[in-house]
Amino acid sequence: MDMPEAGFGVMPIEQARTMDGLTLARGIMEGRLPAPPIARTLGFGISEVEAGRVVFGYEPVADHYNPLGSIHGGIAATLLDSVMGFSVHTTLKAGSSYTTVEIKINYVRAMTPNTGKVRAEGKIINVGSRIATAEGRLTDSTGRLLAHGTTTCLIFPI
Image (cartoon, rainbow, N blue to C red):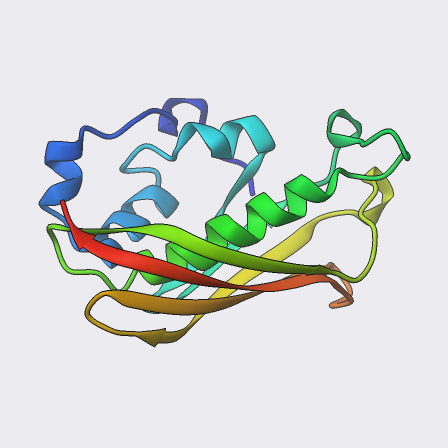
């Protein structure tokens, strides 16, 4: 997904505290709020968002190669960590935040610049008052699975 240059930055924490997670996510997707700088660094963006579910788009580039000539596995891990965590974020009330406590990533296929656009989808498994779990899938444009994972997040007041 193409993201406008002006849409990147760091939102003041005071502003973030006043919004529930779904409002924040929709604002970022619509370009009304700044996307996190990591999105520009890696070239990903939100293409779909609803309560408990988020989809990011990413197009592999040669700048993300590892020494073996494929996209570094850390890119897939970052995409999955981000999309799973953000799916948790969409369920939070104003004044709450989260942090990743644990992630588990399974790599199925390598990504290369020839893979084309990929889709990272995160979905909630369970959200409690302090702990949330989510799952993620990274697929190519034909729906082939590239990687999948799970996360555990700690929810806390900000």
